[in-house]
Image (cartoon, rainbow, N blue to C red; front, side):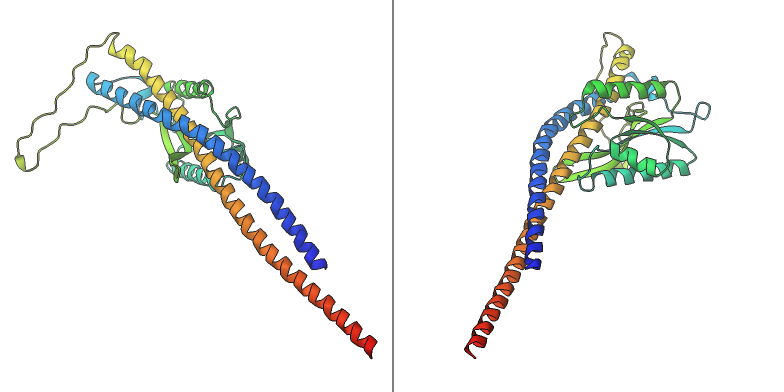
Length: 305
């Protein structure tokens, strides 16, 4: 009887856990749907702003701007900033582990090249990990929740643009989980500053194979009002802020979808465990009933004798 009671208690505990994981799965699904709309809706704007800046830079020719600064030997500081985006909560599958492994690999690579890495962390999981690694943290951001606001991200982007323009950092990188689709999320370390590819946007003319004659592509001419420099001064910070905001949106969406999948897997495993425990209980109960019947029959036979 004791074994059957233990199985009943364990099955009850698993059922309670299943209720929790099912509820968390439903919450993560609702959050994922909301964050998916924001992430997918903002990507065309982010991509188009970068394309517009690249086209404008290619039209102007030699572009000089603090945000496009390529560090030279004279002003190189050998310091880079790394922003790591993790979650505040666990139970999200491999989300935090994957982005932290990517960030740690990037740190080892940069330090092997003789550079100093300053850590900026968003999310309690990243803070706990790097505190355990005994790595100093320059700043942590606790204001970002499930729905990061552009106003909060703008403050962070402005800070890094200021630091980069003042040549305190050679580059700024962001470690996050890129949301590609609901079935694919990839940890990446992306370069936020300098704006890669914008300064050298003027494409080389294509060469024809075998000496064949090839028509030159039509070059679009623009008239700027206000001046091209004033437009770039406005667009380049917008490109950085939009890119930073996209990183946060992708990270949040990836966190929600990975938590949704993890909680669904946990719920399915709980269902399987409940079925297995029910079978064990039925066997234990059947064995107990058989034993009791044997004892009764033995008593009856003893009374007959």
